Amino acid sequence: MADSVTAIDPDVWHMLIHTPGPNADPAVPFFQAEWFPGHRGFHAELQRAGYFVAAGPLPDRAGAGQTLVRGVSTGEITRLARETDPAVIGGFLDVEIVPWRVVETVLRR
Image (cartoon, rainbow, N blue to C red; front, side, top):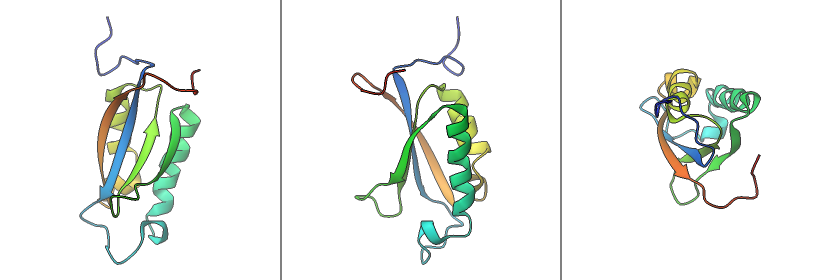
């Protein structure tokens, strides 16, 4: 039996909540920051892997954003988010991985 690190539950998607990291300049909007294209590259890699659903800012949380993914285990998306996103590696963004059990969607595979 697969463990929770490697098991992929198609009903469990993940929200990657991004907030400013210790190296982010609060005077520079994320979309204008030098490191932001690297973060978008991380999104492109998630797309190529078939995990990416959507991303964007959280209007009610200043400086915060979310990336929504599916089709990947909690362990693997945690590794990818912390070890391959240049914005997280560089300390410009912090990331919290939140599993989300989806009970209704029009986006079934």
